[in-house]
Length: 297
Image (cartoon, rainbow, N blue to C red; front, side):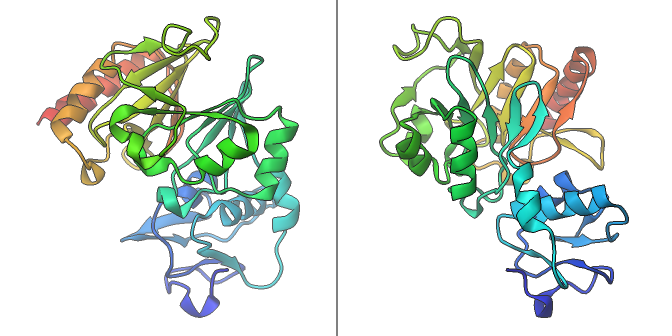
């Protein structure tokens, strides 16, 4: 629970506030940009919600904050708003919410597929999410983009009998993972990659070493890219970014991975951190190429 005694002084007066446990993960700014903004190394409330929709979005942010750093003065509608999560985004894709501090507040996503549902990276393990995932048909695969975002994947794998997928070079972060991928080039996820996959599944795994040695991204239906911490959209600069200050393995390798990624076509970015965004293919390619040039410089 957020502590009013530890609230940042730059919160505007009113119901919602952010306290000094904030890790500046960006979750609240993604969900409720009309209420939360960034200053220095933390989020804060720059404008109190002025409508029912804005208050609901701010309450979603309160629920999803990995460190419980968002609070309210008096009562809130958290119990009612909890039913919004997982949050439908587009087509059969959901934002899980309840970001985990074990993943530095990284986002996770749920894909509802007739051949078996997918979890991309892991949220906190909570009874509410377990119940919702069961109602949506369970989880067959858990795709882990990299070592930072495994969080409670083992608990979800045990609960649903799901198979965890991770690259060999990051596999020590999720001991016992059932499917270890060891590839250097993009591969369709099918029976040739692992016996558990059906050839009709429309997924491609793309190695993107850089942020970590074993980072991988997931391309779904040649339209939706789940980027982990490889790529995101910066809402302030309005351009794609690659998180230079949080590159743990090799910025040079990440630049090369970004260039190879631009050989693929997609319209949506579902990011671990930073803004989720839809761009037309031409704009997406142009922005990635500009990012590659900046990374090499």
